[in-house]
Image (cartoon, rainbow, N blue to C red; front, side, top):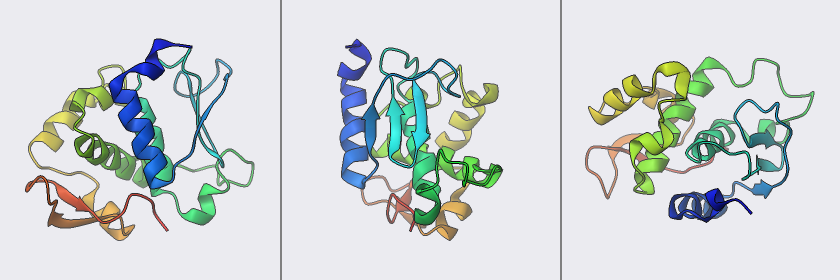
Length: 166
């Protein structure tokens, strides 16, 4: 078993995902996944801990599941899922969702927004989120996941109403 699974950050993430209803399946994956060691399916997030390079990517992939409607979540990884999934709007909402989840879990922002991801825009995202420019907030509000009200624990963050879209 890889030591990646045993880190306190990964344990926090896996416990959080279990609590909000996102299933994690540990399995051996092929080398052709979009992100090393991660794949999405109708069952949840598939993780190959031996191939996982950036554990923070687990939260980003969870965000894709979270912002997808319940009906479409059942189609992830099948030929029935629309080819344009995830849309650019979904991607924007996913990035904010993963930022808010990382804040909720008290993880360093660069744990999720690492320099080797986000099409070389991780610094830009970190800068914007750190300054309170929550790119994607209107989408998360429209999806019924977040509110402009501030969170109970951090008076500057948007409040998450729920973590999974209906």
